Length: 218
Image 1 (cartoon, rainbow, N blue to C red):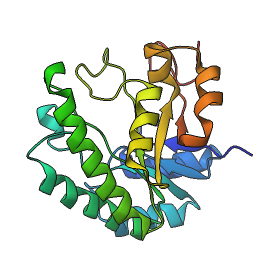
Image 2: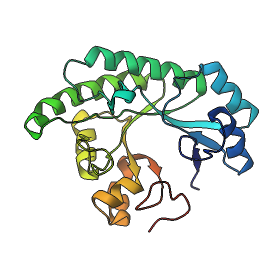
Image 3: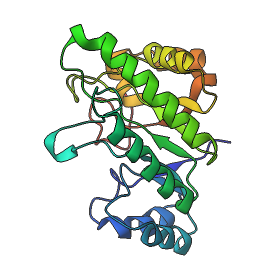
């Protein structure tokens, strides 16, 4: 049976963030996900989960300087120490919250001429993240994101993401399949899901062409 998690970064915008846990439970969700937990202590978040009978399904590792438009640092040369520190922080939260999936954002590619260098850094960083996560029982996820919404994002296609996972070779490294991003970049969602299902660790569903359209997918 499929299990559904409410994305609290997207749903229930009429509520303050910590009040969204109760809103999700009231709507019948048994689990939640969101972008980043780091504005709150693990204890605050754990209490909201416990009070509302919810499971923590997913959150992202620290993405660099989000307010300065960084969208992950996993591919960025010279940021390896910061990346490793971020993975360790994410795993601390994951263990405290009983969360077994952490999404690691790739980051922006400043020029196609630099792709090979950025990919080499990416592979090394993902191998580190997967190794650290394995002992905690956590799966590391990577997500292809469309460049219309996030220009310059390093990872865009499902086959590209699956190839990255194969190159790293860790059994706890999987793809986060976002139907919205896949439809915009590639389309033909059913074929991609069937082809890649064994390598997918989490599926996200949202409206297309507007991600804020939560009730329909065209």
